[in-house]
Image (cartoon, rainbow, N blue to C red):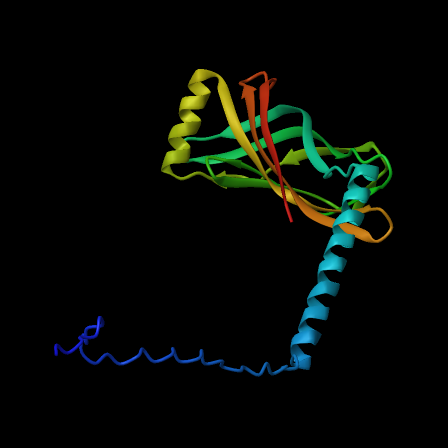
Length: 223
């Protein structure tokens, strides 16, 4: 009697797959840290300073647009060479007439001038000093400054002697006028401005009639 065989074949022993491990959850605890009071204080101070700078900028802009401030200055209007003495030993003596003006172009404030100290020179050799006592120029006004310059006999160096002899032969002589004056004026009620008005001129004359051939002046300002 034949034995009946099972329709299933034993394919060997197989282990059933193990279920996956559940995910691991990591819990993080958030810790609240308080801000250092010094940081808050510094932030408040910076904010206040920023506001003050902004307000100051607005005020300065308003004052500038309202007053349109102009820096006072000094200029040369006319000049004449009245006399010139020079000998072969290099001694130079001059007599000049110089008319200058102090100018204030501000329409709403006066300008005060002080420490006015200008110098006439030839070939870098000082010949005479032009000074003035403190004075005030009115709003949008001018003040004439008249100088009659009589120099002492000044010795020239070799380069100065050569330049003077060449100038006399050409019939044209050039002198320098330099230095500065201190100026002060107000912009609005609280803002006071100060500066130095510097003058640098070349005064050219025909010789011997003494008339000027023209003025070559530059003006500059510095606080």
